Image (tube, rainbow, N blue to C red; front, side, top):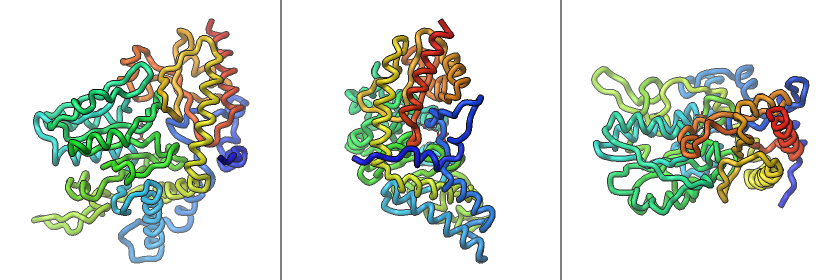
Length: 407
Ligand code: PMP
């Protein structure tokens, strides 16, 4: 067990030196988006100042350099998730875009009237709405793995749910609201017993625990750079080659074709078949830098340090009498949701904000979870590698102050 130098890590993030309302920033909204280290910011600046050029087309020096850097980022993502091939990594605009790609493309190819998609009760809207849209179009329906009071999925009835009309299972690895870590490997194994492929929403998992798509044996996995210390509007979709070859392109345009004529157009090879149009090149390269950054600390080390901080936070928050956790799964990480007395989450969030503490309040794009717990929303604190026990102490003090002010 190694002890990370968190102060040294904090120094890598310029924004953590800033103040809000004259108070040092305590940033606990990492599930929404993480802050960016200098390495990532420099990668964006270097691209635009030194080799800005379009990728995949040019013979000239700058274009070759940009293409090499962009494709290098793909290799870094490939290694990061232990994918077998770099062409199984499709660059996207983020998790939402990746899931929409699969819903649209897989759905058009494989979903028929009467079929269904299985999702879980604790999905982000990004892993609900795209399935609802394609199901409506195809005359298919959605079935939901239920959740219990602790925020854990109830898998007793999974085998019954997975009947021969189910074409795909789509589940999140870690809940952005409850912090629940789902037993993805088990879900994949049980779905595969019925020959049903599985998509994993790894938006919240990718920054917090090591991912190995071959070990998990997932068929598709989507994640976002901006939750991994990288830029917004960029992410990756992993797909097993055999699936990516079977499903049609998502969008048409430049880069995704082999040849175009008015009679017949043929599509490019993987991964370009799914990457129409000029991508966010700087963001892609910076995503590679973000992965370098994570690797420089080591995900197993990040996971260990964060799980210690998470346990510290749960203990510290438990000292607040009026506080009640929403989601107490045995296995959880990153996000902690709670309510304080009968205060509205927004009021707590506002009082914390004035003390320089950034948390999120509301439904966190998981309205079905709010309906299940019959609550309007939660206060959510979510951690990253640069957060400290001192910051958690400030959160606790801040909430206690809110209790006094609101009572
Ligand atoms: N799924 C989960 C679990 C998330 O937390 C998020 C982001 N809040 C998303 C999907 C969507 O990610 P993005 O907005 O980057 O597409």
